[in-house]
Image (cartoon, rainbow, N blue to C red; front, side, top):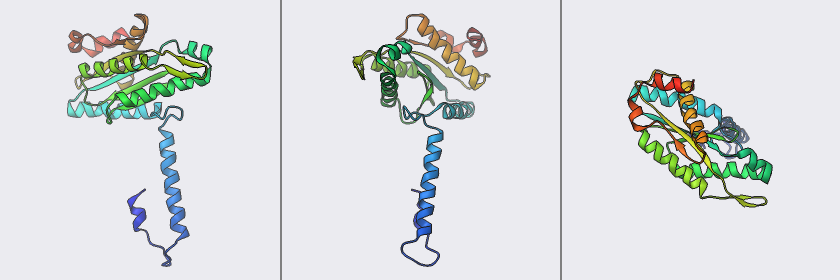
Length: 216
């Protein structure tokens, strides 16, 4: 609750004040609405709108602080088959399980989002590539090792992940950065799914503008 609410006094000196109680309720409702605007209702993760706003903030922070910002893009493998074979309710359970595993895997300062459909995104502030790749691999492994308790029984689930890191010398937009990470995600799918792809260590010094051409 807003601490200023405790300092409010009834204008007519009553201990119980209907006006103050209405104000408290109104402020609580406003806070709930603000939360709903940035939260995906099914998974409880941040939604695409919050993702877009947060990524812009973190990239600007990278340009100022010189600390890299990592981005993980995740897509559940063969998700259409999950819905077709097990039903949409089981598909929803798969999305909710993925969201829970994401929250259990990342740090409190990281920003887990539902990007859309069965695709997710995680913004990792102040995170270099080696650390981001480890987080992605840990999450991939957790998903593979955690069967979904579907409505018709448990079934396996895997995910493909792409990782890239934004560094202060980069001159690309947030949208272009997402396209780079998404490119590594689709590389993971092309190479057989259930894996993590990211730039090789030697490529981290290559011009980002050159790398951007790979996925344009």
